Length: 136
Image (cartoon, rainbow, N blue to C red):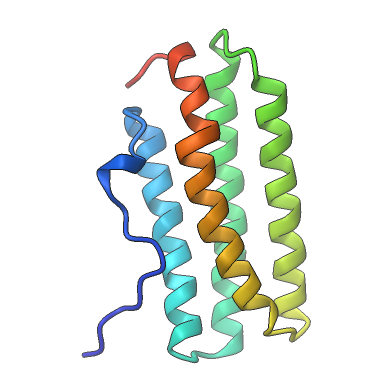
């Protein structure tokens, strides 16, 4: 059996110390890796579209969970962080529509965007709220 292609290899430096959020971040990495694997192994166009759809839905679920945590904290950058989430979801939806419309050149741009954004978001933006929330 062929080895699965990996775009992002999860490691402990990505962990925030909040069990629920870390688990959700790992799931996002898994979906991104499924997308990358489908792309790298030239799998059917519709499979890639389905994976991006799953990514959109799971991202919304994850961001909603993070935003609930913010509501119960004194995190001063809540509004900016939520705006960042919205911009990401909006951009992801545009990519999804482009792929559904048959623009497969979008997939490479999307992979690069996802890898860079997720790592920068977890390692940068998400770490800013750690001092304001209860780790669990």
